[in-house]
Length: 194
Image (cartoon, rainbow, N blue to C red; front, side, top):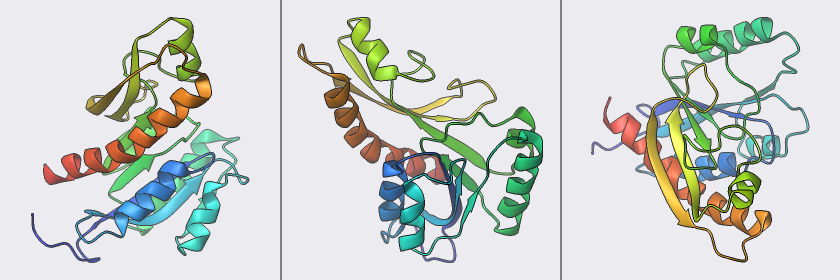
């Protein structure tokens, strides 16, 4: 793999809505020498998202949108993405569905991480649903974003065993640890193919 400098890393935006643990993890990944990305923008749909503090700490440009008018909001976001020459978007707990129009107009790749083994358990409450249904395995998936919820082409998955006494809390934490390993791996895989 060719040596990467700040100049030839892929400019990346991370979209968040909440605690931002995947954002924090991606920031750590982005500053490694062999990382193919630099994080140049954080977009949040929630002004109280804890993840915004990570952007502040690392002096990464951040923008917050309330998403009341999606079309208008997405237009503004696209303008910022073009100005900043962003080529990769990583959704990390972003609780909004991007429109078909946004996906088509963004001239780059959009990835998402989801806490289940897709196509099972799209949407919310994945851990709860897996436990209620007595699943023996769960995990996480990194996939391309399409205009249908959690339905884009799968890039990588990690499967984990659900223990007999598993709670939503223990399952969530177990899967989150795997998410933090899987997302950087998936990004490397996607960008090494370009």
